[in-house]
Length: 314
Image (cartoon, rainbow, N blue to C red):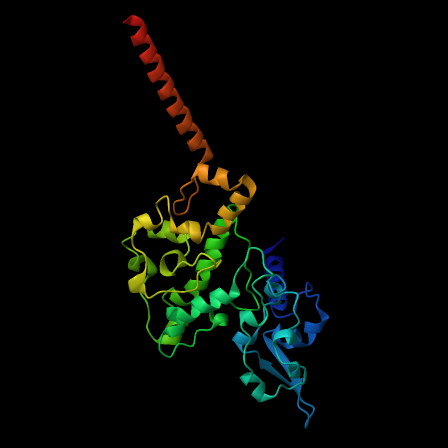
């Protein structure tokens, strides 16, 4: 294949890629949403001028574009757009006053008994109202500022996907607190590098990869699956022993559901006897535990043999 043919092929692939990004993916399978996604699933939308019959094309405002692939993989994928938005949106063009419709919050739809593990949406709402995000003067931060209802995808916590949970949850914080983007726009206060601000940690990068921001920056409430009472930076946890100890904070936050699973599988007594201590970013190694137990057993046997030999020689 000569250079000319290669360039033509690359051009075709680029065109195909752009078209795929600008159209509704074939995975969309909820007919009730097709009318909305016909415009909001694309970067451009068209409409006909009723007076001149002229077809007008406009670029869709970025925040109003719905990533249809992400939507049909998120926790709200079974919903129709009209379940959360006014049915009057089905009338085109939309009435301008529809933009003022009040947004639903989690407790408008979710009860505290339907989810396993129990998420306790009521408790989350109570905690959020006390957080720095809600109490800060002129704060406009809402549930949807952090949790996009069109893409939010919470996963069940287990020892097998903790790294994914940490990365996903921290990405929510970094949307505003990465030193660029939303935080600057909302508060006009550019932040320096997070690494520099966490220089007191022995290895900031390793902490960011293995533990969530909320582990140190939120008040832990044991009956809430995910802490939402974000405290001011002056109240952030700075003591290593808070996490690196037998009574680690992580038992009541990051490892909460994992421990509940282990108690359910092994039984409470077995869980208490094992008394596993969790450290940031790592779980106890069964192999190291076995090796230490073998070494301890050999030491005890050696002492016993030494004692017996001394008794015999007397």
